[in-house]
Length: 104
Image (cartoon, rainbow, N blue to C red):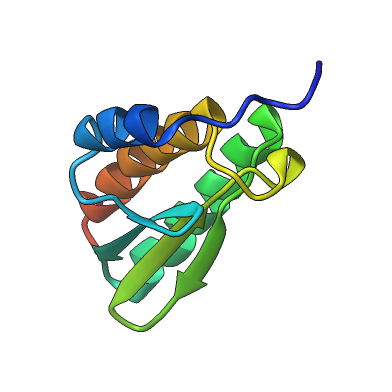
């Protein structure tokens, strides 16, 4: 398994169009989710488990009322690759599932 190929600006723009809520900040894609603290903690555990399985990780920043995810491919020189968009899609699904879990 080699180093993933970086995407072109046009490819990045097209992939972002498929991921509402995500935006490009330099050579990362980011999204901030409004989510309760404890639901976000549970989401982070699930994200970490899935990330381990696919061997690709996001930078996660947890605050009292939101979770921010930032993704880039370190092995590709901190450039955006297809793996980043795949992980973003997975994170969307995980956070959505955890937002729907009742507190009690």
